[in-house]
Image 1 (tube, one colour):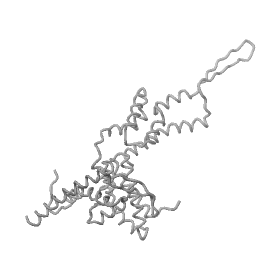
Image 2 (spheres, chains in turn yellow, blue):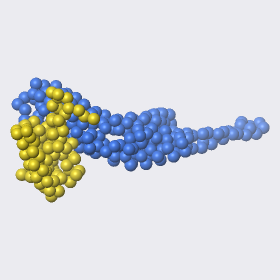
Image 3 (cartoon, chains in turn blue, brown):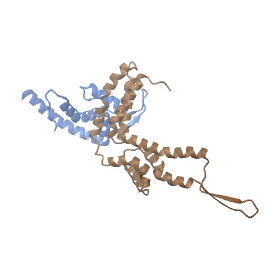
Image 4 (cartoon, one colour):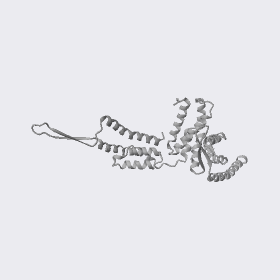
Length: 116
Length: 200
């Protein structure tokens, strides 16, 4: 059983990250397709959503295996060929569901923290 | 080939640590994650102002602790029901032939059913050598030439001796290196299969 330790914010932060991160990746891909390095840098620079840039690759592999994203390789003038990720129809649906629930969840937590 | 710099060595050590941490992740996922992180490091390295240890260290820290990457990968790793089978494969392929070749065939079935090894590992495991050491013993018994001689000695004449050689006879200059090669190869394959299994 996992317990909360006063002053230890790593456990809940890890769990919060894990729940939200996959959907943040889907949201970034909804706007346009991106390659792994670009996704990792964007997420790491945005409020420390990633514990380490490299942790995005197992996550991307999982999204791909679950059919939420698909990939294609493209040559790059700046370095090695890049694997580009784009959202699938299933990914769109999953993201839509998350956005709906997330708003309710966020409003609920905000209401408790601010007014409770 | 250009000499390795301190930066190359740091990156090599980091990737070695990641490879080791990922040993519980099955192929081809393990390989895909390693390739993706390697490409990521190449991309990140290209953005640095200087290619020295002082710049590389913080870049690798940004990539993250290899243990964290492996933990993320291990989270959705299915339970490895055939792990015990993977442990047996190299030894069954080497020694299983001594149990009427049944052990070798079991090893063969396990290696081809396991996702731990790549296609080329499976082919090498199958072809070097069929039957393992037992196959080698069987084959070498056919190769070693045996010579039998007999003769007659008619009265008042010199004896006449006839010798007949059965099987193959290989000159020692060729035969000894050949036998060494045939013996070393299956052990090298076992070490290779074991290293792949452990993710080294």
